[in-house]
Figure 1 (cartoon, helix red, strand yellow):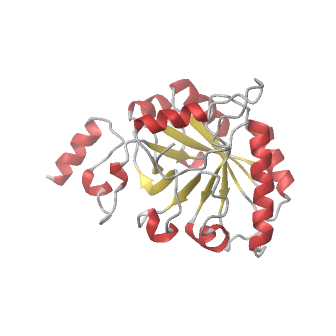
Figure 2 (cartoon, helix red, strand yellow; figure 1 turned 45 degrees about the horizontal axis):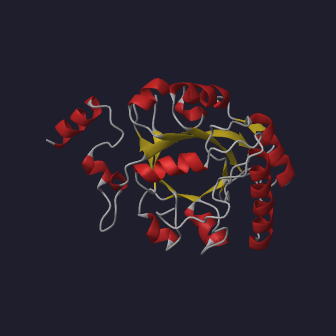
Length: 264
């Protein structure tokens, strides 16, 4: 019976998925309680059919662009333009490599990610990488915060949109807890527990809740994410993150309106 319901759900091409899958968390709003869902992708998802992704009710996509100061995702350009052509709101993210000067990293991102007034805000992906074979740097909290502050400021200057911070729980607990950069929207990874279990009372705007999801149009497994808010709040987010830095208009991207956990 459960299998039949899952098949029916796939037949409807809905991102919501099987209730048994998304209701696996206890005593808190499971991912399916949030109506706005999206994905994040890189070259590992292969050649994505973005029209099919949109038909699957994917409301947004974060696309890997760059890493460090010399790596660009081989599918970035294709994903960037194809997602927009299909009508899927998309933004780009940069994975920080802590053994590069921050100026080189952000310059590399800016050289590879176009300024597009229709894009979602850029994302700074900050993670601890203790298993890296090439970067053995020990992260000192005060120094990392200074570097992040500079990177975020430069991204906002260049793109005219207040960046979003993506973080994993180990990096958050070592560097960002409880409220460092609280005036920036945060995107948290928590695939085993509700965010509050590991991120406490920190207000999040995006939640990466699954790393092995299946979405029509994506050849393999894909990360799935939820937006904190309803459809009206999502529309407000899109409006507020849509300023054009080349138009001379004032920034409209939450610069003076920190995330309050669900209200604007």
